[in-house]
Length: 193
Image 1 (cartoon, one colour):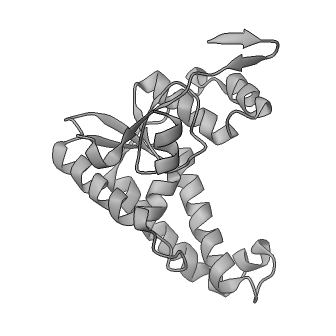
Image 2 (cartoon, rainbow, N blue to C red; image 1 turned 30 degrees about the vertical axis):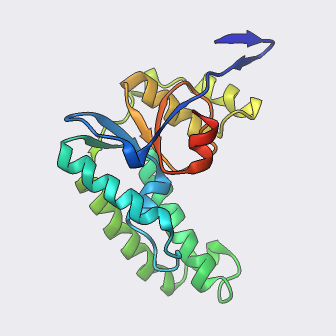
């Protein structure tokens, strides 16, 4: 990696086509929030073609003995996204502001479902957060400022590098960082080949 002024030029990620990928025993795979949304979708989330692909991949991962890894920030993002999807689809006309919805009786049903799914996610994965002292937050801020990566995405890249993991994602923003990506997203496969 080279530096130009305050920004560094990041290496391109290497994307592997999930449809032809063979998981290996004890291979650690960090699973991004968007994949958990496909696997445990909110009722208001329309069924997506990717959901079937990622469900089969997850089943294959488990059968081969690969280890689905979860970072607490991903679980937090999952719960928040689940509740927001339900609000946007089913409750926005009743509660124009999300904060009002969160204080309403309708929220308890949504948050209970999200919490049940979150417990399932915890049960099906290994929680392996990076020790706070090892997380390069200054670099994440720099990557975010440069426009190369979203702040949370930069954190996930950092975690994958330090813990030698691949990232399972459908997010086409994961173009740089120098990590291995597993995906069924054709755009990501095309841009990171």
